[in-house]
Length: 621
Image (cartoon, rainbow, N blue to C red; front, side, top):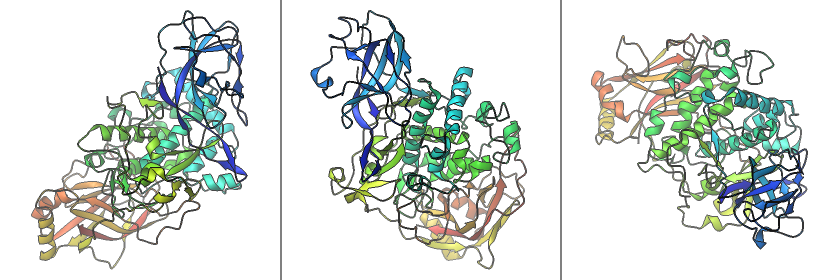
């Protein structure tokens, strides 16, 4: 049986490591008999030497130190001269095989590195006679709630090993965290090119983070020395799992690499007395979107606006804004700042869940599909594999987690394999041969540098709050009046006459802040007077999170344009009811929120100001 698995390569160009894409080559299962000795990578490739058995499995057992194809005799094309018949143990999954012991392994041949066979899976010991066709099943990401004590121990060990490595090592925890964002000063060209490269505020958000978590998962597995370790996910969509997972809280000391003491995490979160709220993790607005992306300048889509790669851009897409950003801020401490978020080990489980939910959004059907334009499909983002080698992936190479990346989630819908999208473009971008380097984090083909991204229809301000003073975002509820003229009221009614979404938006304009500190804001339009405000109250439109909103280009990219920071909410579905209650103005209410107690009641938030908003506008499109 053949499955597509990934190998990794390292090429040198212009005196430095140049990223090469994992190759899509068939992965073959092998049967081997010990003694075979190998080890984890240490600064370079390690190899498992062996000789070929004279015939395939089933006809004769491989002799000592020999390997045979599991399902058939090796074909001539698979036996290569010139040293191409060694297993290159990039993963460290197989340490050594005692004499007389038979093992089954999965290898993926790399045509760019002397046909070296990368050890993709260590399947385990087997006993002759060999029969049937072995399978190479995908890794399964489980909920952290379902992991066994040995699995938790392995997870902790892998994180601890990564944390013990120097920050200059691409397989160290600090280096990997700094790829997302950091206040650390880069001291080497490799660090300068690799750190501060996360993608926020564009339609690369979900794809870049899938690549990022994928390579972290591989590094973690190799660091743990456990071939079966798979990064779990934190399913905070389950009301029973909104408290920080127990392995991240206990033991509450330095012996537990998953534990972060205050102020890196709020004390109540570490104590298990605080949790995420139902509104914090609400994803209904994003899942109602059918369009994956939206025109430049608009976040009214699942993944966000069509824009060039940039570390922080805006506005954010619906799924990034809610629940991704809000969960980050609500967790506080390291997680509330994109430059420190990945230093907290819960970051990786949070993003594994974000990745899982991308699959769930697609599985709803109804026309939902990934981006199909050339820039999204072909832009190359650089990461590091478990051997510390620079590698890259593109959007086209990660849309099928099973067939391309060899993992799935334990509760994935039945839609496990996807059709690979092709660019809907006037030119065949896939044939572009000359890559253009626009930064260590992203490379795009020459013809895809400036995609013809549609721009949002010109927005018209229908109404706005007074601009005499800025609106303070602090620890108390803010009320903002937005007067409506007859013209504005009539225009708003006309826009929503056909009940279509994305017609009328509430915009919080000219947002200014230093950094978030564990507070986000529930946003309401004309909520009923005297009624308790929560996500079930009429007039609730979403949450405002100050996470990664400040534009900031990656190394090698042009600086972002100097534009206001704003957030928009689609209120088309609320217009009629809101104006029926008060046709002369709209009251926008901003309620500060953070963590919640065991009864689901909001806990107090800091009183100090988080930032300010220049104006509240009603926008028609």
